[in-house]
Length: 333
Image 1 (cartoon, rainbow, N blue to C red):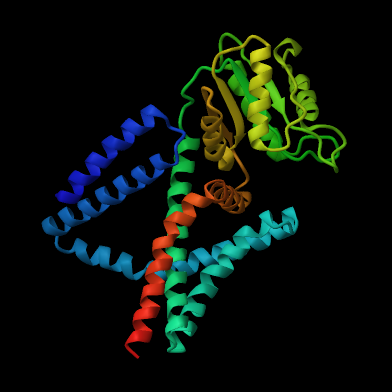
Image 2 (image 1 turned 120 degrees about the horizontal axis):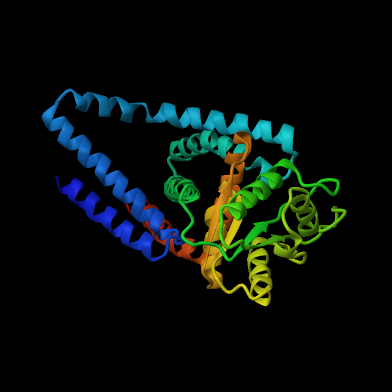
Protein backbone atom coordinates (compact mmCIF):
# COMPACT_ATOMS: atom_id res chain seq x y z
CA UNK A 1 0.00 0.00 0.00
CA UNK A 2 2.96 2.31 0.63
CA UNK A 3 4.05 1.94 -2.98
CA UNK A 4 0.53 2.70 -4.18
CA UNK A 5 0.44 5.80 -2.00
CA UNK A 6 3.82 6.97 -3.30
CA UNK A 7 2.62 6.28 -6.84
CA UNK A 8 -0.55 8.33 -6.38
CA UNK A 9 1.38 11.24 -4.85
CA UNK A 10 3.92 11.08 -7.67
CA UNK A 11 1.14 11.06 -10.23
CA UNK A 12 -0.40 14.17 -8.64
CA UNK A 13 3.01 15.83 -8.70
CA UNK A 14 3.33 14.95 -12.39
CA UNK A 15 -0.06 16.52 -13.14
CA UNK A 16 0.99 19.70 -11.31
CA UNK A 17 4.34 19.88 -13.16
CA UNK A 18 2.68 19.08 -16.48
CA UNK A 19 0.13 21.87 -16.07
CA UNK A 20 2.85 24.29 -15.07
CA UNK A 21 5.06 23.56 -18.09
CA UNK A 22 4.77 20.38 -20.12
CA UNK A 23 8.04 21.05 -21.96
CA UNK A 24 10.38 19.88 -19.16
CA UNK A 25 12.05 16.48 -19.42
CA UNK A 26 11.93 16.22 -15.61
CA UNK A 27 8.17 15.65 -16.02
CA UNK A 28 9.08 12.36 -17.67
CA UNK A 29 11.13 11.21 -14.67
CA UNK A 30 8.20 11.86 -12.34
CA UNK A 31 5.77 10.19 -14.77
CA UNK A 32 7.87 7.04 -15.12
CA UNK A 33 8.50 6.88 -11.36
CA UNK A 34 4.77 7.20 -10.68
CA UNK A 35 3.87 4.46 -13.15
CA UNK A 36 6.58 2.17 -11.75
CA UNK A 37 5.38 2.66 -8.17
CA UNK A 38 1.76 2.07 -9.17
CA UNK A 39 2.66 -1.12 -11.05
CA UNK A 40 4.78 -2.49 -8.20
CA UNK A 41 2.14 -1.53 -5.66
CA UNK A 42 -0.60 -3.17 -7.70
CA UNK A 43 1.53 -6.30 -8.09
CA UNK A 44 2.06 -6.47 -4.32
CA UNK A 45 -1.66 -6.07 -3.58
CA UNK A 46 -2.64 -8.65 -6.20
CA UNK A 47 -0.09 -11.16 -4.88
CA UNK A 48 -1.71 -10.87 -1.43
CA UNK A 49 -5.23 -11.31 -2.76
CA UNK A 50 -4.31 -13.89 -5.40
CA UNK A 51 -1.07 -15.66 -4.39
CA UNK A 52 -0.71 -17.33 -7.80
CA UNK A 53 0.01 -13.94 -9.40
CA UNK A 54 3.43 -13.99 -7.70
CA UNK A 55 4.49 -16.67 -10.17
CA UNK A 56 3.41 -14.44 -13.06
CA UNK A 57 5.63 -11.61 -11.85
CA UNK A 58 8.50 -14.04 -11.23
CA UNK A 59 8.14 -15.37 -14.78
CA UNK A 60 8.23 -11.84 -16.18
CA UNK A 61 11.41 -11.11 -14.22
CA UNK A 62 13.05 -14.31 -15.44
CA UNK A 63 12.13 -13.41 -19.01
CA UNK A 64 13.94 -10.06 -18.77
CA UNK A 65 17.23 -11.42 -20.23
CA UNK A 66 15.28 -12.84 -23.17
CA UNK A 67 13.60 -9.47 -23.68
CA UNK A 68 17.03 -7.81 -23.76
CA UNK A 69 18.21 -10.30 -26.40
CA UNK A 70 15.08 -9.68 -28.48
CA UNK A 71 15.63 -5.92 -28.17
CA UNK A 72 19.24 -6.25 -29.31
CA UNK A 73 18.22 -8.38 -32.29
CA UNK A 74 15.52 -5.89 -33.26
CA UNK A 75 17.95 -2.96 -33.10
CA UNK A 76 20.52 -4.78 -35.24
CA UNK A 77 17.87 -5.69 -37.83
CA UNK A 78 16.56 -2.12 -37.84
CA UNK A 79 20.10 -0.78 -38.25
CA UNK A 80 20.59 -2.97 -41.32
CA UNK A 81 17.28 -1.70 -42.73
CA UNK A 82 18.35 1.91 -42.14
CA UNK A 83 21.71 1.21 -43.78
CA UNK A 84 19.96 -0.22 -46.83
CA UNK A 85 17.22 2.41 -47.20
CA UNK A 86 18.72 5.62 -45.78
CA UNK A 87 22.50 5.31 -46.29
CA UNK A 88 25.50 4.87 -44.02
CA UNK A 89 25.53 8.14 -42.10
CA UNK A 90 26.37 8.00 -38.39
CA UNK A 91 22.83 9.00 -37.42
CA UNK A 92 21.32 6.21 -39.51
CA UNK A 93 23.58 3.59 -37.90
CA UNK A 94 22.71 4.42 -34.29
CA UNK A 95 20.21 1.58 -33.91
CA UNK A 96 22.78 -0.88 -35.32
CA UNK A 97 25.42 0.41 -32.89
CA UNK A 98 22.98 0.19 -29.96
CA UNK A 99 22.01 -3.37 -30.91
CA UNK A 100 25.65 -4.47 -31.13
CA UNK A 101 26.31 -2.82 -27.74
CA UNK A 102 23.45 -4.83 -26.16
CA UNK A 103 25.30 -8.05 -27.07
CA UNK A 104 28.91 -6.92 -26.70
CA UNK A 105 28.90 -5.02 -23.38
CA UNK A 106 27.82 -7.99 -21.21
CA UNK A 107 30.51 -10.16 -22.81
CA UNK A 108 33.14 -7.48 -22.21
CA UNK A 109 32.03 -7.12 -18.58
CA UNK A 110 32.25 -10.88 -17.97
CA UNK A 111 35.72 -11.07 -19.54
CA UNK A 112 36.93 -8.15 -17.41
CA UNK A 113 35.62 -9.72 -14.19
CA UNK A 114 37.10 -13.06 -15.27
CA UNK A 115 40.63 -11.65 -15.23
CA UNK A 116 40.46 -11.35 -11.46
CA UNK A 117 42.24 -8.01 -11.56
CA UNK A 118 40.66 -5.30 -9.35
CA UNK A 119 41.13 -2.60 -11.99
CA UNK A 120 39.43 -4.70 -14.67
CA UNK A 121 36.61 -5.52 -12.26
CA UNK A 122 36.24 -1.83 -11.44
CA UNK A 123 35.96 -1.02 -15.14
CA UNK A 124 33.29 -3.73 -15.51
CA UNK A 125 31.33 -2.24 -12.57
CA UNK A 126 31.63 1.23 -14.10
CA UNK A 127 30.37 -0.10 -17.45
CA UNK A 128 27.39 -1.63 -15.66
CA UNK A 129 26.58 1.63 -13.87
CA UNK A 130 26.96 3.80 -16.97
CA UNK A 131 24.93 1.40 -19.14
CA UNK A 132 22.18 1.28 -16.50
CA UNK A 133 22.16 5.07 -16.25
CA UNK A 134 22.00 5.55 -20.02
CA UNK A 135 19.31 2.89 -20.36
CA UNK A 136 17.21 4.36 -17.55
CA UNK A 137 17.41 7.90 -18.87
CA UNK A 138 16.58 6.68 -22.38
CA UNK A 139 13.47 4.89 -21.09
CA UNK A 140 12.35 8.13 -19.45
CA UNK A 141 13.11 10.15 -22.58
CA UNK A 142 11.33 7.69 -24.87
CA UNK A 143 8.27 7.34 -22.62
CA UNK A 144 7.79 11.08 -22.25
CA UNK A 145 8.59 11.79 -25.91
CA UNK A 146 5.89 9.33 -27.00
CA UNK A 147 3.44 10.75 -24.44
CA UNK A 148 4.20 14.36 -25.38
CA UNK A 149 3.76 13.66 -29.10
CA UNK A 150 0.21 12.48 -28.37
CA UNK A 151 -0.82 15.49 -26.27
CA UNK A 152 -3.24 18.06 -27.63
CA UNK A 153 -1.58 21.46 -28.23
CA UNK A 154 -1.74 23.74 -25.21
CA UNK A 155 -2.33 26.87 -27.32
CA UNK A 156 -4.42 28.12 -30.21
CA UNK A 157 -1.68 29.10 -32.64
CA UNK A 158 -1.13 32.61 -33.94
CA UNK A 159 1.61 31.16 -36.15
CA UNK A 160 2.52 27.67 -37.32
CA UNK A 161 6.20 26.94 -37.97
CA UNK A 162 7.14 23.93 -40.07
CA UNK A 163 10.64 22.78 -39.11
CA UNK A 164 12.74 21.99 -42.17
CA UNK A 165 14.73 18.91 -43.11
CA UNK A 166 16.77 17.90 -46.12
CA UNK A 167 15.11 18.32 -49.54
CA UNK A 168 15.90 16.04 -52.48
CA UNK A 169 16.23 17.34 -56.05
CA UNK A 170 14.49 20.55 -55.02
CA UNK A 171 11.38 18.69 -53.82
CA UNK A 172 10.11 17.81 -50.37
CA UNK A 173 10.60 14.11 -49.50
CA UNK A 174 7.95 12.03 -47.65
CA UNK A 175 9.40 12.83 -44.22
CA UNK A 176 9.03 16.57 -44.76
CA UNK A 177 5.76 16.19 -46.65
CA UNK A 178 4.22 14.62 -43.54
CA UNK A 179 5.11 17.74 -41.56
CA UNK A 180 3.62 20.03 -44.18
CA UNK A 181 0.38 18.06 -44.40
CA UNK A 182 0.10 18.12 -40.61
CA UNK A 183 0.62 21.89 -40.65
CA UNK A 184 -2.10 22.32 -43.28
CA UNK A 185 -4.54 20.27 -41.20
CA UNK A 186 -3.77 22.44 -38.17
CA UNK A 187 -4.11 25.63 -40.24
CA UNK A 188 -7.51 24.63 -41.58
CA UNK A 189 -8.74 23.72 -38.08
CA UNK A 190 -7.76 27.07 -36.54
CA UNK A 191 -9.81 30.29 -36.48
CA UNK A 192 -8.73 32.98 -37.05
CA UNK A 193 -6.28 31.64 -39.61
CA UNK A 194 -2.69 31.58 -38.31
CA UNK A 195 0.46 32.63 -40.17
CA UNK A 196 2.35 29.66 -41.63
CA UNK A 197 6.16 29.84 -41.64
CA UNK A 198 8.10 27.07 -43.43
CA UNK A 199 11.60 27.28 -41.97
CA UNK A 200 14.94 26.02 -43.26
CA UNK A 201 18.06 27.28 -44.97
CA UNK A 202 19.86 25.93 -48.03
CA UNK A 203 22.42 23.18 -47.57
CA UNK A 204 25.48 22.80 -49.83
CA UNK A 205 23.84 19.89 -51.69
CA UNK A 206 20.36 21.44 -52.00
CA UNK A 207 19.09 23.27 -55.08
CA UNK A 208 17.13 25.79 -53.02
CA UNK A 209 16.39 26.53 -49.40
CA UNK A 210 14.19 24.14 -47.48
CA UNK A 211 11.87 27.02 -46.63
CA UNK A 212 11.37 27.90 -50.31
CA UNK A 213 10.74 24.28 -51.32
CA UNK A 214 8.19 23.87 -48.53
CA UNK A 215 6.49 27.14 -49.49
CA UNK A 216 6.01 25.86 -53.06
CA UNK A 217 4.38 22.71 -51.72
CA UNK A 218 2.07 24.66 -49.41
CA UNK A 219 1.00 27.05 -52.17
CA UNK A 220 0.33 24.12 -54.50
CA UNK A 221 -1.90 22.64 -51.79
CA UNK A 222 -3.97 25.84 -51.67
CA UNK A 223 -2.49 27.80 -48.78
CA UNK A 224 -3.20 31.54 -49.35
CA UNK A 225 0.00 33.48 -50.00
CA UNK A 226 -1.20 36.17 -47.58
CA UNK A 227 -0.85 33.68 -44.71
CA UNK A 228 2.63 32.50 -45.74
CA UNK A 229 6.04 33.85 -44.72
CA UNK A 230 9.24 31.99 -45.64
CA UNK A 231 12.20 31.62 -43.29
CA UNK A 232 15.28 30.55 -45.30
CA UNK A 233 18.34 31.10 -43.08
CA UNK A 234 18.09 28.52 -40.28
CA UNK A 235 20.59 25.66 -40.16
CA UNK A 236 19.38 23.90 -36.99
CA UNK A 237 16.24 23.50 -34.91
CA UNK A 238 17.04 26.30 -32.49
CA UNK A 239 17.48 28.75 -35.38
CA UNK A 240 14.29 27.44 -37.01
CA UNK A 241 12.38 28.43 -33.90
CA UNK A 242 14.17 31.68 -33.11
CA UNK A 243 14.19 33.11 -36.66
CA UNK A 244 10.56 32.07 -37.22
CA UNK A 245 9.47 33.73 -33.99
CA UNK A 246 11.15 36.95 -35.16
CA UNK A 247 9.23 36.78 -38.47
CA UNK A 248 6.00 36.11 -36.59
CA UNK A 249 6.45 39.21 -34.43
CA UNK A 250 7.45 41.33 -37.45
CA UNK A 251 4.15 40.31 -39.07
CA UNK A 252 2.27 41.59 -36.02
CA UNK A 253 1.35 38.13 -34.76
CA UNK A 254 2.20 38.24 -31.07
CA UNK A 255 0.34 35.14 -29.86
CA UNK A 256 1.53 31.60 -29.29
CA UNK A 257 3.51 29.61 -31.82
CA UNK A 258 2.96 25.97 -32.75
CA UNK A 259 5.90 24.15 -34.35
CA UNK A 260 5.30 21.11 -36.55
CA UNK A 261 7.90 18.38 -36.91
CA UNK A 262 7.99 14.57 -36.93
CA UNK A 263 6.88 12.69 -33.84
CA UNK A 264 10.38 11.61 -32.77
CA UNK A 265 11.56 15.25 -32.81
CA UNK A 266 8.69 16.77 -30.82
CA UNK A 267 10.03 16.66 -27.26
CA UNK A 268 13.48 18.11 -27.99
CA UNK A 269 11.91 20.86 -30.10
CA UNK A 270 9.53 21.67 -27.23
CA UNK A 271 12.47 21.82 -24.82
CA UNK A 272 14.15 24.31 -27.15
CA UNK A 273 11.06 26.55 -27.24
CA UNK A 274 11.18 26.65 -23.45
CA UNK A 275 14.88 27.54 -23.57
CA UNK A 276 14.11 30.38 -26.00
CA UNK A 277 11.46 31.69 -23.64
CA UNK A 278 8.32 32.23 -25.73
CA UNK A 279 4.84 30.65 -25.56
CA UNK A 280 4.91 27.66 -27.87
CA UNK A 281 3.99 24.04 -28.26
CA UNK A 282 5.06 21.36 -30.72
CA UNK A 283 2.98 18.78 -32.60
CA UNK A 284 4.24 15.78 -34.52
CA UNK A 285 3.60 14.15 -37.86
CA UNK A 286 3.82 10.39 -38.20
CA UNK A 287 7.08 8.79 -39.30
CA UNK A 288 7.79 5.51 -41.04
CA UNK A 289 8.20 2.76 -38.43
CA UNK A 290 11.61 1.61 -39.62
CA UNK A 291 12.94 5.16 -39.25
CA UNK A 292 11.88 5.72 -35.64
CA UNK A 293 14.45 3.69 -33.61
CA UNK A 294 17.48 5.48 -35.06
CA UNK A 295 15.63 8.81 -35.00
CA UNK A 296 14.75 8.50 -31.30
CA UNK A 297 18.31 7.44 -30.47
CA UNK A 298 19.63 10.45 -32.41
CA UNK A 299 17.32 12.77 -30.48
CA UNK A 300 18.36 11.16 -27.20
CA UNK A 301 22.03 11.66 -28.02
CA UNK A 302 21.33 15.31 -28.85
CA UNK A 303 19.54 15.84 -25.52
CA UNK A 304 22.46 14.24 -23.65
CA UNK A 305 24.89 16.58 -25.40
CA UNK A 306 22.74 19.63 -24.72
CA UNK A 307 22.87 18.74 -21.00
CA UNK A 308 26.32 17.17 -21.00
CA UNK A 309 27.59 18.72 -17.76
CA UNK A 310 24.46 17.70 -15.89
CA UNK A 311 24.96 14.12 -17.11
CA UNK A 312 28.66 14.20 -16.19
CA UNK A 313 27.73 15.28 -12.67
CA UNK A 314 25.11 12.53 -12.48
CA UNK A 315 27.72 9.91 -13.45
CA UNK A 316 30.44 11.09 -11.04
CA UNK A 317 29.05 9.03 -8.10
CA UNK A 318 29.27 5.90 -10.28
CA UNK A 319 32.91 6.69 -11.09
CA UNK A 320 33.68 7.40 -7.44
CA UNK A 321 32.07 4.13 -6.29
CA UNK A 322 33.98 2.14 -8.93
CA UNK A 323 37.28 3.71 -7.85
CA UNK A 324 36.52 2.96 -4.19
CA UNK A 325 35.81 -0.68 -5.05
CA UNK A 326 39.16 -0.94 -6.85
CA UNK A 327 41.02 0.69 -3.95
CA UNK A 328 39.28 -1.61 -1.47
CA UNK A 329 40.12 -4.69 -3.55
CA UNK A 330 43.81 -3.75 -3.76
CA UNK A 331 43.91 -2.98 -0.03
CA UNK A 332 42.61 -6.46 0.81
CA UNK A 333 44.72 -8.54 -1.60
